[in-house]
Image (cartoon, rainbow over all chains, first blue to last red; front, side):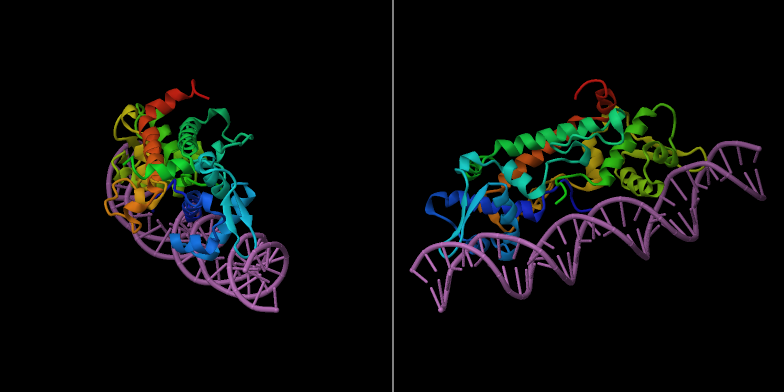
Length: 144
Length: 144
DNA sequence: AATAAAGCCGAGTAATCTTATCGGGATTTA
DNA sequence: TAAATCCCGATAAGATTACTCGGCTTTATT
């Protein structure tokens, strides 16, 4: 038993990398190799992380020498929830209440516990969608 | 990519089983085999789940024929958070902000992202500690 | 006393997921 | 052309999950 309801390394690294892009938003594209070094993340693993981020439209790539990655929108318009969803899939503590899920589970309406997971999911989404990359940068001063 | 920040089957089954115990709280000990049947959970897997629940003092066992399990306290005094913590360990989206954790991570105070995970953790704990087994039973009528 | 109903418990396991690593190809700048 | 960079599929080690197996102990009933 480790600890649960956790985001994977992919999600954690992804958020950290996106914060770097937010910090350097105005200074042109940042190469992946540099981000990997600054954040002590395997370059090749980071490549795997940036693919879904780009496909989700959160970042844009500039190929070739002097290339790199830039946020597709200003830091204030990218939510941490966007990053997590792109990397980890829909936010949900259990399958049956996954965001965007339409079908019902086999347990039907008699399921007493679904309400718990819905409340938890909503609470998680609300927090993650309330924090933008701009907020993350400012947060360093305040909070616990 | 499946879906993350999710509770394992252990946690999900555990909560469901505890709800059964809450429903039958006044009718004496409920045998594991019966719970397994009612909830369509493997009996042997459920055994593994009840061990930590008992060690955490959430349930009490009655051995021998006519034995079974009973909640250690009335449904109103057992929080879903207690069950999750007993089965899944400390609530935390990432290691470095695990509940009860004292040591600091290698990234030190310069970590910009820790605030995100702290807020998320607090929000998750708050929801799970706000719902008791008694609430779960009542919830069936209201909510979505 | 014998039997059956129940809990107790450690070891083992197949499938899956995570976390990378590897190797090469495509694109652009200097 | 050479170097920097992104693009992307394959694969592999290790961890985790979700169970299963087998045997023991305790207690109520007969």
